[in-house]
Length: 278
Image 1 (spheres, one colour):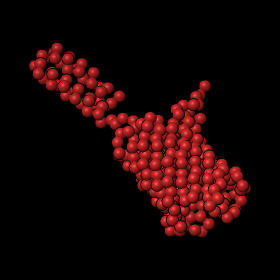
Image 2 (image 1 turned 90 degrees about the vertical axis):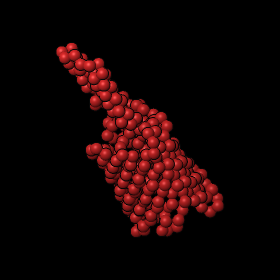
Image 3 (image 1 turned 90 degrees about the horizontal axis):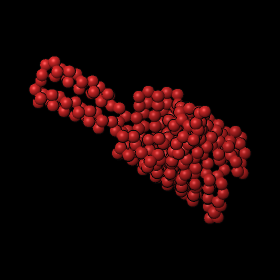
Image 4 (image 1 turned 45 degrees about the vertical axis):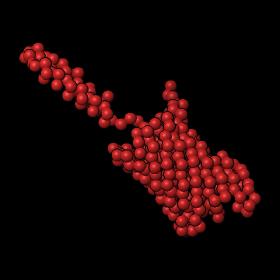
């Protein structure tokens, strides 16, 4: 309920009481009531409606993931398509928050991994399973800070894995949103495909275009892995629907060492509360 509207009945009663004690001209009473009603309507119009995709907190197609966890007790799924060089992939994510609205768990994997490095295409399940825990540790005004411990298991044709964490601050003002992810991971079992350390800095800027939640985004990524540095950029669009959104992205990968063009599309749906406390 808007702040002003909660007090309007009391104000109207006071006018009626004054009118009984000291008769006022009907025109003044009508003018006062009209002003009160106009203020109430203005206050209601000033509060923008909840975006259609307001419940979504995703990993999506962007370099960054959304810092806020999903709603308490909820389940969210993501399914997409990714094209990079000769590779075709179907990434999927399941996020769930069984305990608290400040904590959720996510499992990320490629359901399909199809590559043709030597003109001979091979298709199989992805070789990496990622686990991420998002823990919101601070929220004040438009600022949020999330810590996300994470791990990855190499599950097909490789041994070992990775462990690390991401620090993810987010700042929103008006229709603008800025998100930073700083990630450091270390290998369990060092190989040429699993470097000892990997340091990622990801930044994305979002601009909301309407009350539905439609937005465009621009991003930058810097990676230091096995002593080599790479930089990438991206741009994309978020198209909302009720309790979900479609994301479209193009990215320019490894700008300074073997440029590659990437395209992604993904559908994210928040299915609402699946976990209820007894």
